Image 1 (cartoon, rainbow, N blue to C red):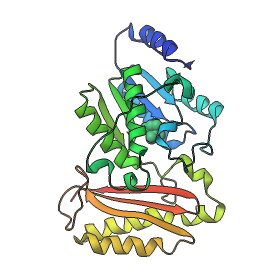
Image 2: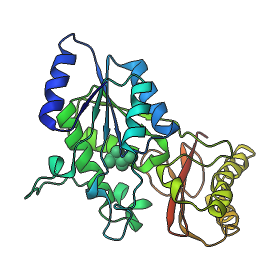
Image 3: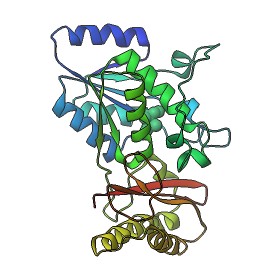
Length: 282
Ligand code: PAF
């Protein structure tokens, strides 16, 4: 595995790796890798000749009062995991490499998709994500890029951006990887105290319960939203950000569940913001 820190090094290394022909898969990450990231790297490894993993805690997607400085980092651990998954190229740029002095260009999606769910409580977040992902796409020119379905809104935003900006890249959304007790894996789980960690699986269990109710015939979104809210109020010191039941494709609100549906939740446990979702095909 080659480890590179600059765009120039990356392009040079990729040119060599590409000279034999074949496809390139990109797994963009913010590091502190866990089984969720590993599943993306494995899928990329299965489907491509060359696998590039980027690790970059992107300042542009954090709000002024968010956890940019506290975000967990473990470069050595990440490199070891990437190597174990036969990554070809690890790209670890510094902030100045992607956002040099005077940097001024951002990618912003208009419309509902970035104005609902996380877009409400994290204004500017998706602008930061779309900008850095565009830059990575331009630098790496992958054939495929891999993202976790845990960030369902991010996946929808990136797919839309790829269509709108005519990127010739296939976006592969991979299933959420969960701890044995259901909690969706996230680098931010490391912020949880032991007591919060013990209660966090209530979020996933509430989603599973809602799914089971739909399977049993429930079609009313409002009842399911109430059920999830009720379950989440049982967590000590939890602040609900949102529970939304939306059309999984265009993210519009749904009153009656009739098609592909996304149930998405964001909850703050103390200072830690957790998100989770479940997709249901009715
Ligand atoms: O999902 C993430 O880790 C980040 O939002 C991403 C896609 C790597 C962009 O910084």
